[in-house]
Image (cartoon, rainbow, N blue to C red; front, side, top):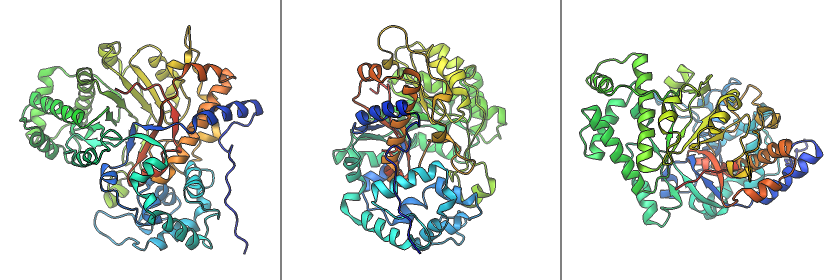
Length: 497
């Protein structure tokens, strides 16, 4: 049987019309070598602190990547067959080569999905694979990738240089002791691998570890958290500790964008009641979470961090998977999200404050043109980071005079964003494989070219008006998230401190 060759079209993400393709390619050509500034990511800090070699192809590309194993689960292949650990320590496949064979035997199932797009890029561009994955080629591809990851040049810190990553942020709980970042700072990487402050687990009463983490917050900060006021002071103390460690931003993955503050005495009473053991209602949970988003905005004005808000993901949609395998296994499903009214309390108070900066994410692309673009066009503090749908050009790209009109959602290449109903709750969001960093940057650069050429026809305004010193890679996730960053490159106007 003949083996199919795996080859990539260098213009595979560019628009089809000739003029648009030419201009988009020109823009991409001028930006693809710029360094990556990856300020929203989820690679664990210990990956860089310990700098250990990656185990093998399956443990790098399949077991930790919930987009890969969830796609296969949608086709009837249990996560246990792919080596995903169970909470109850039940039996799972432990032989990495067997896991890899299962993946390759079902390669056809990825046809038409964004997952396949970045996997192909990883295989070809990062590992030099030239065979299409299949039952016949599985072992040869496994051996080729295993040889790559065994090389010292493939250690996490070495990949920072290989992928031209100028800065990368991790995402760290408010109760993190930041020990891994201290080690990185001691090794001279403190300004290259930065923490990000994420207090979500302390903002939601219904998290199973809420009371435990409140106690941990008190221990770390040295501030009594028995009262609501002490709780807020402890959060301020942890933010200050993060600032000392080099943090640039906070990260808030709330279900809703609601930012309505509670009356202070009501917040005090509710906090004390729940901390004392009372069961909160769903309205209590939602009200306190909204209040905490407002409180974080207020603290942002105090310490100057950039606030990132990415709501609208209903976490752990499949209860059975959550019970068997735990949270964050790829079952976060988008919900319809309202921003205009929800963010009004926060933006009404802080939106024109020169100390306040917020970046809004969405996985509900229908809201991009209707609500997010007008909000960004109204409040100088608001920036948009898109995971799909329309793309909003940076403010600096406007040149002189009035900003250019924003392209509608339809200007984005449809093939780039579609999920074909089989993988990824949103097209270009959080990822979990280090190997696809090069691929992520490429798609985003191409999408910029597509959006610009469809609306403005020539890139000259973009070239002359946009500062081109920074490129941002969005959302590499857990330990293998490093490989995917250069697949996610996009020029931004984020003014990080």
